[in-house]
Length: 263
Image (cartoon, rainbow, N blue to C red):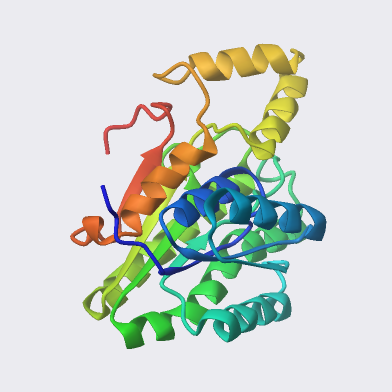
């Protein structure tokens, strides 16, 4: 199926590894011109080179910290200098630290607020004008199943990913008539460093090995396994295309069947 994404300009935040890299790779395969950022320069450059070699796509890679407004400003300036517009924005960030609600300190909440919510709001400010002018745009936020079912020891993620989802829904209502579609994806367990970190913390808390935790976690999905980031990219590519033009403001789980909620 031709998704019609050739020459679309796609920006993927935190695109050097994990789910971000899977999304960036798939969009490049579909013909998008890419811009990716991440804090770690070496891994970012390596990822960009590997995507160029494997797909032939144009890839702009700029080191940036999405929590730092100035750093984000410079990244988007580089994007618009290189491509002149943004058609697709993938709002992806690392996850906040684990911890219980009242054990976490004020500075933990403030840092998570900047990382999970404000980085996405600021990124949207950078691209919505361009998308509105062109009458077409896609914004996709990468969140967690914690939006639907709160996770133990994940107070920061539970709070701020829900806030980010509410922001995305409201934005989708405000800009639908200008050709912009906004969606939220609820991530389950994928084969990423983040899942390994959370699994190691959960295993320590329970006094079991990481291997035992992983086996239990995989068994807890309907499919009996963790996801591949490239599978995540396939869903994003569909939502980024005109094939999903009658969808807007959705909240879709991509979790291997972990969520047992009906709504």
